[in-house]
Image 1 (tube, helix red, strand yellow):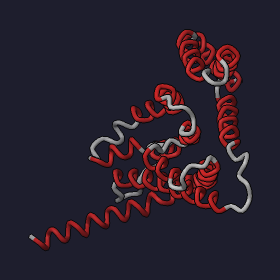
Image 2 (image 1 turned 180 degrees about the vertical axis):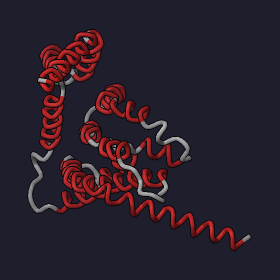
Image 3 (image 1 turned 90 degrees about the horizontal axis):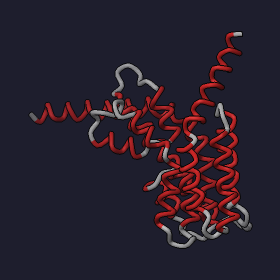
Length: 255
């Protein structure tokens, strides 16, 4: 009995090790991206005067990428749980669809499934959607290690950035602009990918109007409410515009 149990343990360790070795190369591009962005995030959090361990804690518990940049500044602002909740929901709403899309793929892996759904970032989603484990490699452990390694890269890079930020010999004043730059790049990338720009224009116009009406201290919640209402009200025209643009692109390709 002990011999059988020992054999099973060795076989299990071998399965896990093979999955880790197969998953690691898939995550190298994520490591490169997370190292730069995570370092910037750690330095940014440190420039706000937050504890050096805060980036690693948020990277472990929240693990929300762009949301973590926002939360860092929210920690220093007036306590407003509703505003924080709505902000997090709007920034991370796409993850609801990620989870739905991966329900079948993650089914049957026990506690690993819960962790993989929790730690599903944009990059992890793109890898686990397309990557196939090599022959003889357990799929569940393969996807688990892709997810685990990606989060480890982010937490480690953020922690390293915080440490570097705490010992930098020069002023980190202005580092908080990294958040503005990041969201600007995200917006421009989304603008290029979208077939229509109504939603982007709504996202620009509503906050500007609310800023003028409510002032800089209380325009956030009205802005998010206006964006949500306008997107729901104009859903059909936006979808129609997307379909029309897709048809035009198809005709151009056919020509």
